[in-house]
Image 1 (tube, rainbow, N blue to C red):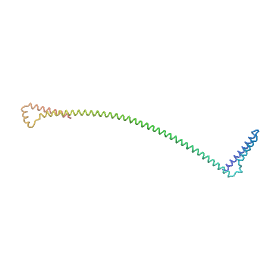
Image 2 (image 1 turned 90 degrees about the vertical axis):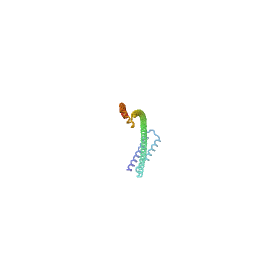
Image 3 (image 1 turned 120 degrees about the vertical axis):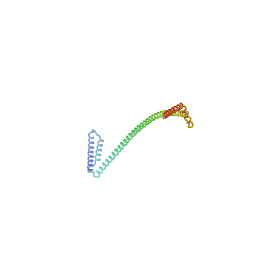
Image 4 (image 1 turned 30 degrees about the vertical axis):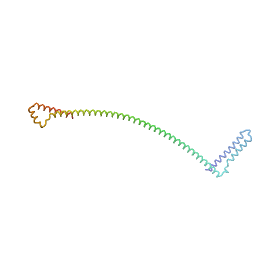
Length: 223
């Protein structure tokens, strides 16, 4: 296959050489009144073309292999060059993509931070409003407790005053009743007086009944 490639390249060089000769001759013919320098240049072109196109008879396998190796090396260099360019382009695209992703992440983080700050501000406002409500509720509760304590103190004072009045009335009743008590040493004398004066006994019995009613009244009031 390498030999056929080399032969095709040699035939291409021969064709190019013939085209150069045709071009030089046509140039001479198409230039009327051409002078000597044009002829010398045309002959020079044709000689260069003939020298640059080696004949197949003079080219051997070594030269063909050398030409093929040179072509392969050139192709490899071109491939490496294109590969390096593609890698460089890919690296640039990756860097650009990473840069865009970082920028998007920064935007997202900034948005999250902003939303978090808004939530914290709203939470603080709610806490402040709740603190005001709690303070108002505590104020109302303290006022209610103060009023309740005042009511309890008033009721207790009234109860103590009533109990004091009941105790005073009871003491008065006891003093009245004690004035009618009969000692044992005077019991016989009082019996004789009652027998001799029934009206005095009647008054005594009425006074005792009245004292019993007062005692029952005080007991009811105490309950």
